[in-house]
Image (cartoon, rainbow over all chains, first blue to last red; front, side):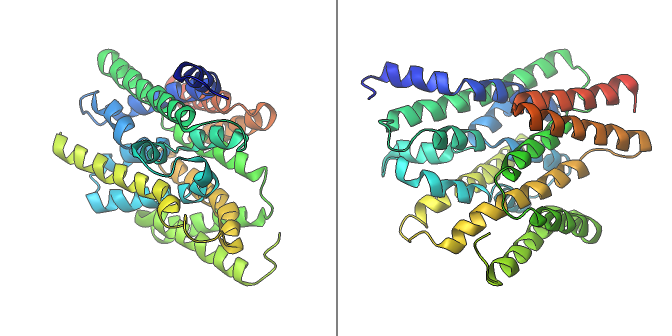
Length: 229
Length: 108
């Protein structure tokens, strides 16, 4: 049982250490890339404050470079982060039912925060204050990383060519984690086929078309029965 | 450099991100968990990750044979390290490090 703010905080600090080691360098990679756009470096930590989604922020650098419209940015982010819809399902019962803290916890439900929260036994004495400490610690690591990368880059202007690979590596790592527990791996080949088709047919609408094709394959698969795989 | 444009994009992306995280809490809190929905929740995320890896690859400048080789090598390093050590930071930093060295140092 957690009795004090201090014990909740120290428990969250301990649990979030792995995320700190991931978020600070990754946030720095974002900050470095962001500086290639030429804005003031303070906008990089601002992105970490208001968007707070690693993959979406990396995508934002690419989108901003091409002068994307607000609507396109909005839709691309919805599609990119649609996986989060499925995360919420498993933490529904853990979060407080109302109040500002509930909405902040939902705002801060990143891939990594999700994995830390679901790693805690749900029957344990973990309380809302612990989740609040954990979520805000994770976000502060991320914002610090964004600020460090962008400010270092703006003051020293080192060569950032090649840093864009961090995004590919991040997605690949997330993919490997999910493949470990996946039952129907042929669907990955289908997703690869969908990506190649989208790239060849509609390179300008790559994400929307590729994910749409994936959804179509999955709907056919699930409706054709044999749901238990 | 239009700062208001940048802030607008941030706002659009911030709202979209929040919506994707809030949907299950607002919409699904009241309905029972449906087995089909669970099935989607299991199978769709890895498929989206495949698409995202491809999306990331399209954002790299792969214009030479050498660069293709470098990309394949970096991908293989990420996969191998993550398969054996399962440490996300190690996998990402090592793969990106090799790629950056290849692009900047060796000039692939």
